[in-house]
Image 1 (cartoon, rainbow, N blue to C red):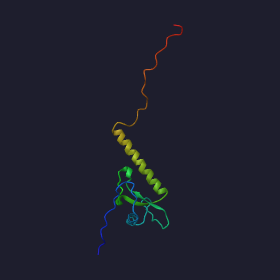
Image 2: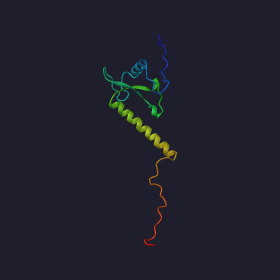
Image 3: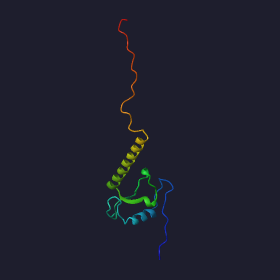
Image 4: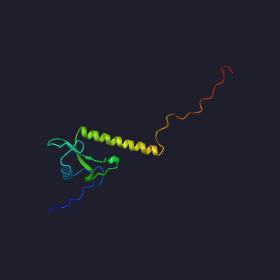
Length: 120
């Protein structure tokens, strides 16, 4: 006997809270292991859901893009990597569009008019 097929949860907007039933399914799908450190998450440890491909880097807010991660250092490190990747992609895009790097020297004006000698 096979179990019923459960459709994948897909959020309607990026800020939508993940329902507890989906949180439980994601935890079980990853075998109760931290996505980052690969170690089992023990009872009482604080963990969160992490987007495998960050939303800012084109990931989607759906069950297939979520994974459990230990709160604290592992989550902070993953977030820092996501932001660094986003920044690099932004710089590369700006460079291809001719918007980066910014000019190093300011535009030069023609200067001030010279004053005549005193007394003339």
